[in-house]
Length: 131
Image 1 (cartoon, rainbow, N blue to C red):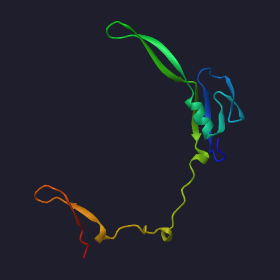
Image 2: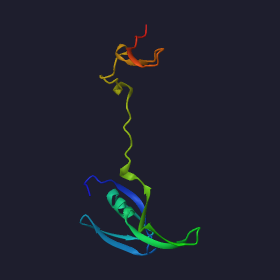
Image 3: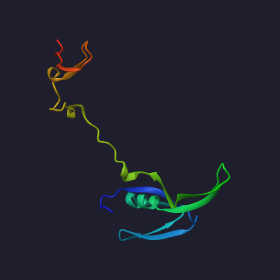
Image 4: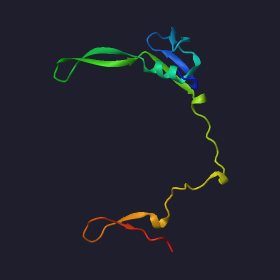
């Protein structure tokens, strides 16, 4: 967990045991989360909890009448993001005097355009600058 890890507001859901409390340690820090409650958590913790899944198997009869075994993954937890908080910072407004053209921008007479002559082969030719 990085020192600059942004904090986000989430609603925690313990999908395996609704209403239960989850206690865990992540990167040396202890967390205690009650299902259904709102928390301010580091984004890395939210990503970690949302990535936890367990395999789930079931049987199903296919169109030919055969019994088929299927496996899927089921999420254990869900952290629904309510407010991005520090994750999305407001964009800095650019003043008109701060805007400038990049110095590596090509001048019109340096721009190369493609022409298709009558024989169908493309050749590169220099564009003529506007008069």
